[in-house]
Length: 159
Image (cartoon, rainbow, N blue to C red):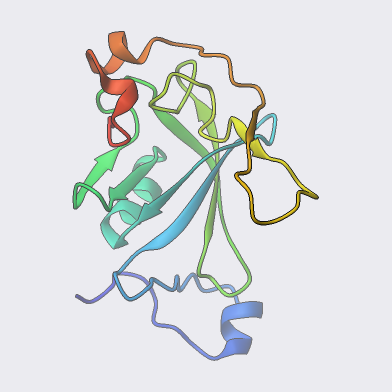
């Protein structure tokens, strides 16, 4: 499938130029880190294909590609928790995106939390045993069963 974006150029053009030429992986996807535009908190990581990126740029609302469901989806299409894009940035070699967003709704995580990153791995632990996660900013800000339907908090593909 041909991309609607500019073709990849030289390393110099990619790293120092002004032309947006995103590098999609072998599956036609590019990772998109989503952060709150005002606090800087990382909210989620998702994947975009060519169409999701086009729709996100054109609508200023976050669209993604669900690898598990094999289809395009708009964040907030079932929950109402839309992500308005304030700024879309690309990394130095144009193979990762950063969406700085304004949340419309209390949270982005299908578990009912403000962020999908609500647990931390203990560092400086000895390898070879079960590592325990520490909950950080893990309070639920909405009820996923009300937003997505009964049992949705257990379904990682709720949205």
